[in-house]
Amino acid sequence: MNFKETEEQSSVRELVRSFAEKEIRPGVAQRERSSEFPAEICTRLGELGLMGMMVAPEYEGAGLDALSYAIAVEEIARVCASTAVTLSVNNSVFCYPVATFGTVEQKRSILTETASGRALGGYMLTEPQSGSDAANQKTRAVLKGDRYVLNGAKAWI
Image (tube, rainbow, N blue to C red):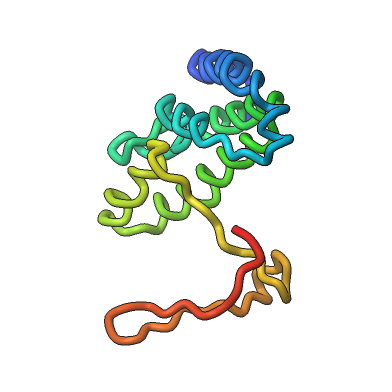
């Protein structure tokens, strides 16, 4: 695999590095001390196309490649690991499965909101009895009539 950056990838690095230094770094220590979630920063990341980097433009994503995504995560993590994790989860753990396996309607209604940064995607894995061992999860979704009933407990999302 060729890891030499293209001009587009170098532009992504410059954009994200500049944003991280100017918009994220100044408040990192305070947010960490107060356990404040960087909601405004996530909104701005979405406006820059970074919350749905590999999502197709028709679903309000940036339509970029995996290396551009990795570069963006790297540049955000240089300044704030917490924000980088939020960016990463939204892109890879949420957007990717919806973009790959979701219906057109799910992509239009759900993916556009998360790829644009207007909403955040989450991943509900950790359970009290199994931690993050996906094979040992107990929560189930059971179809009851025309809706699903979720039954189980999560430690955190």
